[in-house]
Image (cartoon, rainbow, N blue to C red):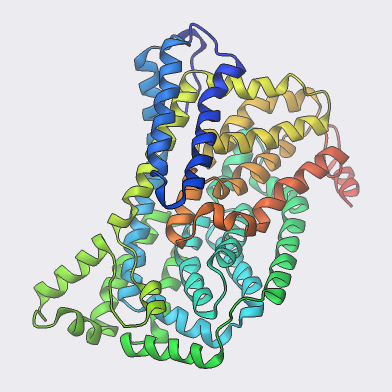
Length: 492
């Protein structure tokens, strides 16, 4: 996304004026949160604040309508892959339930996992999956979806499980050389991806260790109502009664993960997962088809049933509230509200960017920077700020990297310090913002509100704090004139 053209902004907005849309957004979102069941849709709040930003840009900053429109269209264009992926994930959830993939994963998960150690294992599995695939979104939408079902069956609170999944997924994504964000951050500052990853080890490894300890303690001391063995056996029996549970169904998620590891982009990989599941339905779930179709057991009936599920989601009435809650979900239509929020959020960010308000707010932060620690702190806070305002993880890397590159050079700092700071706050904080595309995606797929899982996404909360501590103390902060051996000695 291109920055605003100063020549097209006739009245440069100050920090106070630029902050008005952001303050209104945060205030309205907080009011909405307090309203509970009476809250208006978050997308409507975001759209209203986007209109406010456009009015300020047009009548105060004197920016032409064409410039504002171009800024919004550029922002929405950037979000189109996310919008399409969200629709595909809705279809994937529905088809993986219909084909028996999700029921199978939950069934076998209940065989090997216990409530006390579940959160640690949950985080580790998500981390490995994201590290191998380079995608936090694919991990959350596939492995995460199954782990949520296992957690519900074990009696683990959904917000605990969601936090562990997101922590693991974003750690793995951040450390994977196949990740888009992990390649974007070093590219923006002019270094190679492996130098970037090695430098992130100093912040990411301690953060994930702290997260794992947190999940171990949380699982050990959580005193909620944990299901006993008889109830777990009941859930497994209900799954077997309604689905054909076969280990051969593991081929479908394995194929998706393998394809992503081999470099297949997320959209084709998710599409592959959908069509593999469609092909598996008549092979593994014929009894389910017959039960669902009744007298309409035919190719036309099956065709209609499958593609209606893709559109509207899977539905079954087992007579058990827990089982119905686990499996009655998915479908592209269920993702419409989420995508409305994504579009509204990108419009908000586009108006702020094209009117110069976003640049004004971030540049204002640099005025008080006098030290290396202050520069690192400003970078981290700006990345978090952009996640709130532009509602996009990519922009939270691009904008700070672009704005602070010269400042790091002036302080004789190696650019890998900048790329690490952008990932430590830009990448991992994105799923903690309710209207950010990452927060919208995670909440929609996992079925847990962003503010509910936020306190339990330990890695995402700790990573920026460790990065800040290292910046303020000067540990692992490397200068341009240090040799690699000196840098390693300092880090040790």
